[in-house]
Image 1: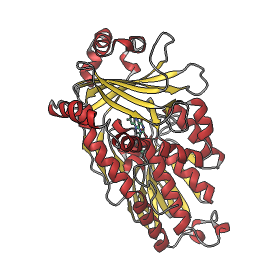
Image 2: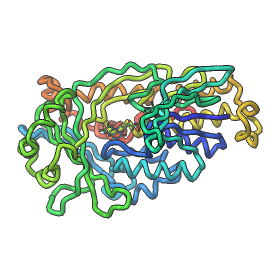
Image 3: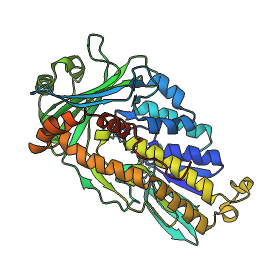
Image 4: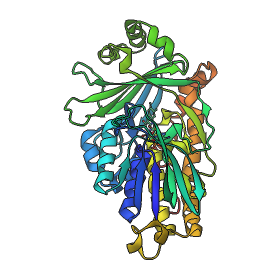
Length: 425
Ligand SMILES: Cc1cc2nc3c(=O)[nH]c(=O)nc-3n(C[C@H](O)[C@H](O)[C@H](O)COP(=O)(O)OP(=O)(O)OC[C@H]3O[C@@H](n4cnc5c(N)ncnc54)[C@H](O)[C@@H]3O)c2cc1C
């Protein structure tokens, strides 16, 4: 059974490693010329951490990342605490792991390479088609190392029994039509300053109504670096970025520090606009995340704002659920033939279909809950609404302190609200 994974990101690398463990022959294709992680930090929730543990990289990531035991958010004008989610005792084994994307990417890439997963760079997938019972990929090779620097090359790659689309929000294979969200954020990586009084084991945010938000997330260490880092983020309407680029950076310092004066030692490390990357968010999900010999995982199957910090976790859980379903339902009886030529080892289409269906069923409820929660919560923290932050501060925030709501919120953030891989244990 030959499998192609489109996208060398979080979901793509994880699924390729799981499949290689089962004995499948896997190719990863990515548009990048060199392996690269885009963006700043993120939080790995306990459900995502379990998946990393199954890949054997949780321990090393634990050493590099920063354990967060609380998410805390204050409204600056009223001084009200409007977000307070605790994972568990400080120093305990329940935490969100703040980590730089490059650190996570490095660990996943090393794990895939150790399993002999083949990674093809400078391979941008334009589309796919079925021929004679196999799926083929139309690939544009744009290798800058090539002597004919500007020469673009299109070829067909295959045959594949299965193509896994893990190419994220800009997938060319996924039929998902997502809705653009009105707000995004600029994100940057800064050093954790010695002079700060902020806690290294908390994700903290400050809001003014819902139209301003600034936050700081401790993320541990970058590969080959001994300086503790943090991710700084600043909420911004999706069309304001160009305007922001033209404003004086000191003007932004003043605005940010007016919202949260204690953040000055972090904010002042941003001396040029290029240190912050704009991320625009969208929302939506595929009701059926598979087609004939094609399956979608991660952001190509569902996407939401990072307000609940679940996107990377979702991609990891999809990867695990898909690999487990394939192992359970689509593995040919004699696994010693798995890496022989595709013509002799192809899984029966019926069993492959059964596996893809099992994957979709396993993930449906979990994805649906998080899509719904993200849809409901995001505008309370990022929007121009006056009513929603009013309700957040005076109704939801007080309610969130009444048992059993704190426990429910904790399990929501941890990713354990419903079984994340139903029926696959
Ligand atoms: C600013 C920001 C903060 C976030 N914070 C969190 C957080 O705290 N916690 C959390 O869990 N999630 C967070 N997320 C979400 C998380 O980063 C994504 O959900 C996750 O990376 C999705 O993984 P993926 O494997 O689907 O896609 P990606 O990791 O985006 O990987 C996609 C890969 O596909 C490649 N590719 C794309 N198109 C093609 C093509 N046509 N051909 C070949 N290759 C292609 C890309 O080069 C890339 O390498 C955040 C997202 C953003 C933007």
